[in-house]
Image 1 (spheres, rainbow, N blue to C red):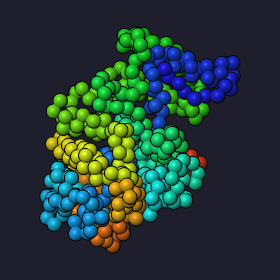
Image 2: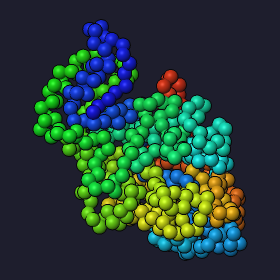
Image 3: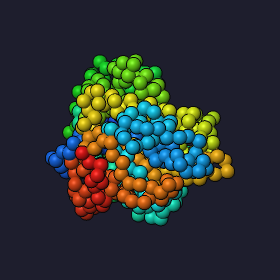
Image 4: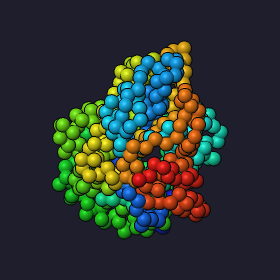
Length: 466
């Protein structure tokens, strides 16, 4: 059922705002959570467009190890290089970790950045930098929560401010779970609208697209509510619009009818709802992405950008709590077993499926794909055969819209422990994303108090641009 936050103050006609909002929810009848759609408000779209019409961010939470992926050190001692070697790629002279055979054949589409630096070894605060481009105050604060002074808006929120919703869908969606501390108890700082306000929060979806019968979360008809019955209730909803219109000055529902219509579009089977219907994909395509929660989430991201969403961020998912490190990328123990057993094989399959699928559909040139993480892993193994957190240098990869393939930017030392040249900060990475979307870093948006702020304080990474 639709639920909107409201206090108990009463209107001039004696009806409380809470009662009117509750009546409006009853009028919709079968809509379980269209309030999810109230994550978008216009903040001045820019007519400029870069090469990228949309962005897919693949965020590896837990830390992506540079040694086994994009910056292998085959000549370093084994306690540094690890248990795996390096393989040649499509790009002459470029080597990747041997556990990425499919990605190695796609490097001519990719720009690899080997010198990303946050200087922060904590998940939530180093992650805050990668999500916002701003250093957390202080650094190295594990389990940090959102709030001042660390309330810079996320990339997702800024895209909400810069791009309009399309066909009943918001400009930015994040799935299949939130980035969180304490085993999911608290969200990371930098995942929401911050000083831009809650209306610019991205649409967060907690979902499992690999489940049978998956549909848009919160878009299900309530039990017993068939489409024909919903249609009969819509005229009743229209009768409520006049009193609701008198509440337009209230911030909580200033765009109530717009979001309401978006929610109805999802329920009524419009194009927005169809974007979530993975059943429209062939079995071969679904198999290509792997039948995992992560793989199907990335496939869903492709469908959403086809439907007009400007940015979709997909978080990595821990696959099996019985495995070392909960099945995730935070490999403090049995690192080699984890990366070889499931982490890198799945990433290799899913990433290559996405790049090739976008290319075959003619979408890669207009879709920027960012494979990023909050930090890398330590050069040396610990006593538990694991690698720990390392924000002093790590690797990310960009591909698609606006990016020149076959490029390696920056050089780390022979242990992949420190940068030697071409240092890139999170603000530079995000400035590059905005550039590819057609927005200069100095583009101004306004916070909830009307104060101007640039969307980025970094510099575009020119060598990786097409």
